[in-house]
Length: 478
Length: 142
Image (cartoon, rainbow over all chains, first blue to last red; front, side, top):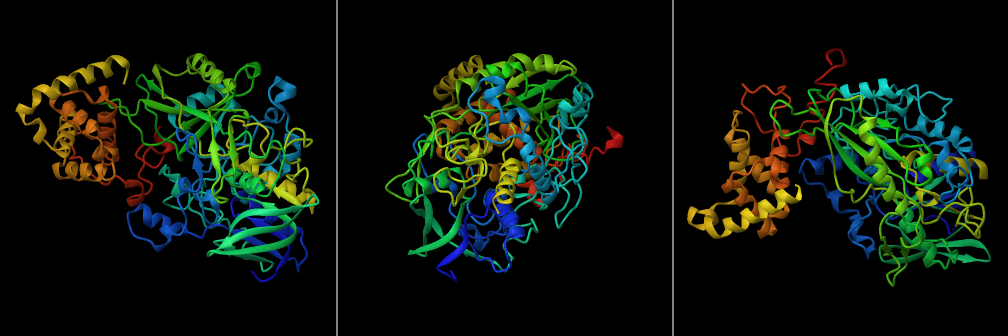
């Protein structure tokens, strides 16, 4: 650390921090002083691939296993993320649908939970910017309004996707994705290896391959191995960030702070700092999913060019949302088979992803170990479970255009690898922790970034939106 | 596996526990059982025997079966009783994983060719080898 005080201190190097910094740096003066505190270390992509091939790499032990970093009081559900430089960009699967306009107004449209303090139209230009920076592949027609074109052409449908697209048009589309459809910006084209957590051909967008220049900017100093555990919050301002590095305590002052770890650790840092907002740490959640295996009569499901080829919106919006959760369908193109001679691929698997709502019984709490928060998650809401029943009742008729032999459903899947809602966004401090610019309602020089900000938990994947929220926050604030 | 099959299998496994020791049940290794299950299930294919054995070695590395006596007994019982792979999740996963770790689908399911094992981490040894993708089924052909 070169200085004792900075213009901006950012904590974490994942999507939320990186997109926030990107916009901040585009507006900051040339002499701005920025400190980035990263808890982990860089584990380069090629070294990750080596590890997956069974080869040894000295990088493998630099970052702790995510499951060792928190105390799980309800271990039947684990929370999936990656520690180290670039955060969960190293393990995400690159699905980037936008939210629907309705997702931002659950209360006013459906009488459920709360409306977000900003709307789809506010985010639209920032969605476009993120799509450009990530080189997203996507279709012309989408169920959400879109004024810009996707930078890359869409991935290819499978034979079954083609039939569903013909039937449902803009409600069944090539999935918008950060798995490149053609080589771009130093990345290869995705070739449907379907092990996207570590892409064998470096096709998905990560912070490491982003070429956004954020961490090479001369105004930015990055300290690795810096574990932030609290902040000094005084007189309604954040004064210092406190961290451990190599067993030694450090304290750094700044005019502005941005917490950009994840929804578990952002809230732990706030709780350790004495934040008394009633919603800090509360409402931890994510989507709930199950697999629908659809057995087909003499129809081979082949030809897709990526892992998830398509998204189906037929069970997403509608009157049912007053009572039961929206569902987003993902057409999965992993090399699964049906164990029947001659019918190997007469099968399509859909991942059926349901939204959830923040529940007070699901929360992050601090412990005597300031680095290790405790998590309690007692399950999804009734609203979501009703959504499961709704989708099972409706799916057969939705798939009537296919020669369906039978549909088998898996049990609920343990995790969608998203962490949402512990510092939720709201109009006032009476309903949440931060405002629409991701600024803490009480500490007005403290940004709390990432998907912890989500007011409700739409079925769409969160990364595109949390990145757009970071751009929006920095653009409107500096 | 549905409840009926589960009860059936549990019952058979219990009966097998009593009856099968005399048939060499206890001396059969889980590797032999797994190889036998794959070979029987795919008897209509020409399998590379060494490849099947190598797959089983790789597949069971770090597998929970190594520390679960119950699962070991389950696997051996299924083998001795000739249970169909689609009747058991353990078996179907085993056969499914074997077949998708081979070149069978890359060869467009040609049953006249010997099926060769590539590797359980095939995606990293041979990226772009999803046999159902557009690289093997180009748009003009489907």
